[in-house]
Length: 143
Image (tube, rainbow, N blue to C red):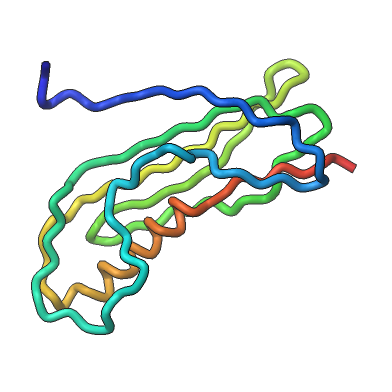
């Protein structure tokens, strides 16, 4: 086993065809979070910030848009600061009469240590991570 190799896994799933006019779902329901996200943050920090994980977490969800549905508007989330980069994007590709949808989440943790004075920037980065992990895909019936 190569300890420098990337870890990859693949999963497949099925959802029932939506019956309502709007349908929302999590494209990464089984994906483990790259970073622990507390439910509340202290106002101030006096100790240095130490992250035990540096690296990239990348997830891709691909599916065929069900006939009679369009993809709801989703503004891409693409943010970066000294702690890392966060992206959640949705794109489509026409393939014959079908529309293929590709959803990508990517979290790059680039900084493992920072002084307590960088706490606000760290909380901003972690807010972006939380937003990306909680992003949903929306399907809407085509009128």
